[in-house]
Every structure is written in C-alpha cells, then in structure tokens.
Length: 258
Ligand SMILES: [Zn+2]
Figure 1 (cartoon, rainbow, N blue to C red):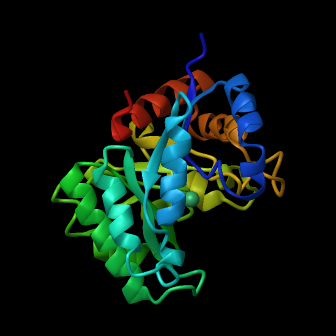
Figure 2 (figure 1 turned 90 degrees about the horizontal axis):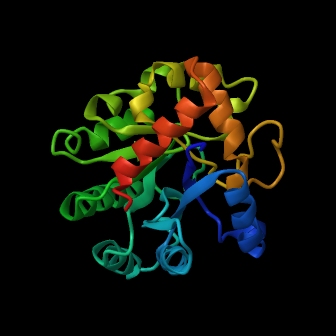
C-alpha cells in the first residue's frame, strides 16, 4: 500500500476553499492524503480550525496569530490563543513569524508576538509553525536563544535560499516545502530542498494559496500536494514512495500525531 501523505499546513476552512471543504477532503483522501494540519491565523480562526478538526478523522489543528495580523487583533486576542495552546486541542503553535514583504504590522510587534508564541510552545512542549517572508536574518536573530533551549519547529512554505535552512536544520527543525517548490524560477528553494536531509523535510499545500504546477494560479487544495511530493522526489533523487514515507514519518514525529 502507498504510504499516506500529510499536508502539514492548510487553511481548509478559509475563503473559497472553505465553501467546498468537505468535497476537498474527499478528493484529498482519494489522492492519498491521510492527514492534514489546519493552521490558525488569529483567535477566531484558531478556534474554528480546532472545532473543524475535532469533527473529522485525520485532521489536526494549530493555534496562533499570523505576523501580518498582529496589529489588527484586539487586546485579548493573545489570551484566547494562549488558552487554545494550553487546551490540549492543538498539535502546534502557529502560524507565527516575521513578514517584511507585506508592511502590515510593525516589526517590533511581530517580534513580540513571535517570542510569546515561542515561549508558549516551550512551556507546552509543542512545535512552532514559522512563517517567514523576506526576513531570514531577523528570524535567526530572534530565534537564536530558543533553538538551544530545545524549541522544536518547522519553517513552513520555505521560500528562501540554500543557506537559509540554517541554523534551523542544525537544531533538528523541519523545513516544509509547498507548491512554490515546483515553480520554474524557484532554483533557490530547490537548492535548499536538495540540501535539507530527507529526515527533516515536510510537505504542505498552504491551500488555498500557492497551487503547485500544473495547477498554478488556481485554487489550491490538499489533494494537489501530490505534485509537490513528486517534485521533491525528483529534487532528492528518490522515489515518490520514499518521499511519502519519510515526510509522513517526519510529520508524525514533529507534531506527535497519534
Ligand atoms: Zn499559512
């Protein structure tokens, strides 16, 4: 039997994908996706994905405040997210991180928020799901004290260059590859994938965004993760089965899936 794939980062309940979430789940199972991690971006969506995951087999949730949202959210937002993180209903903390591509929140607010998430993850012994865009130097700086303290995590939707996998892989973190791995100009991402040990690679869709080639530009959904897995296999010079087996094992270990 083909090993099931795990989509480690998906916003299944968002926007147009949310309207067809149940149908997308059926297509995902048909495509061999056995489990999906649903990611929150604020208190409301974190609760929403945890509730949705609780009603479906093979779905898990993460709670956090997206770096682009940290300025919009209310005063009590973090308290609600922290409560979710302590509740035992989530398998990860996030997404959190630093985004200097969109100018939606002051950097100091993003850093404060990231540090809170990282501390909470350490306390609960959960992995952090890190969003980083145009900000690897800052991210390294902020997380530098946390790696040696045993913080576990994943750099989601990796979009950097070959060297940007460090120091995260050295801390035993995972690097998660999304549909952008398949894009023609993504040489840097593929170089990073080549260098990341297979034991530390994860795959994800980040749906509804970033559909992989050959569906680029369309609505993304978990079933399409197959294209990213195929491309990762090509880059690593291994079979599809090996990639499926390794990324699924890695995801199970990082998120401590039952
Ligand atoms: Zn995301």
